[in-house]
Length: 105
Image (cartoon, rainbow, N blue to C red; front, side, top):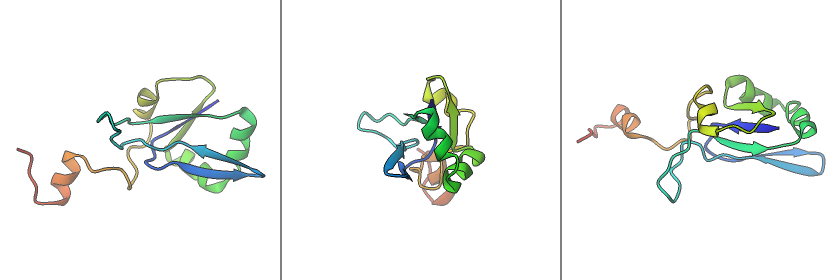
């Protein structure tokens, strides 16, 4: 099973004695200057069932920031059908133009 995410920061969920970290990093430029729109985390079916019992995980899934599949897919393609960047994502050129007096050259 895979959890696809469009959140900027990784999120750790505690299930019993185990901690499951759903990867973040979407909409953040990496060291290669590449900005992924989505990222994937592999989980077991049992872990996914437990994650869905956690209100904050369920809410993010309902709001479209998390999506699940039993198959591995291209996270960027999956992200195209999900909610966009969360509030902590890096600003892109369009966002900077909206929120400041800076203009694209």
